[in-house]
Length: 162
Image (cartoon, rainbow, N blue to C red; front, side, top):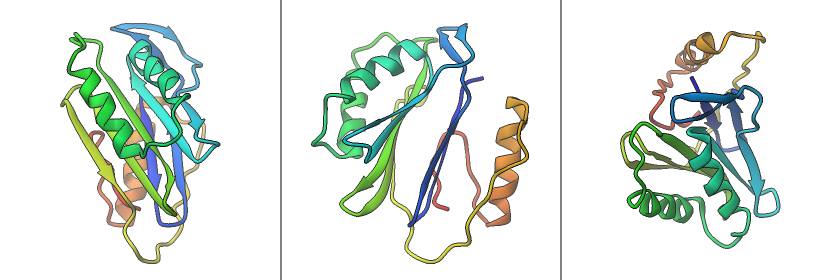
């Protein structure tokens, strides 16, 4: 299992991931850093799934500083149409502060879709996530339980507003 989890509100954004890296169905590492900061630390690029595809996009985005997360994800989508992905699926998320708003965009190769979200306006209680260390298979369930307390129902294929 390889995952990234993103929680965004009007005041903060949090990215969490495991360290597993794979190439196809083969695990190649358990301690990989899955997200980087770009655009002078204003944006992040996070990957899950096939590490080779994801890290290639990360390297490209290190040189780009004048596009929004949505534009960058649309570029990933367009390039993915030319790749022979098959079992080497990947997810890439780009987000951060853009025009004084927190925004997150994602491409998922399994569904071949893009997702774009900005946090809803309003006041929210802070969400705390703890009780580490957790086995990776329990982390998603615990996170879902905490978010359901706030009437937010995540899916591993969509973003949500906290």
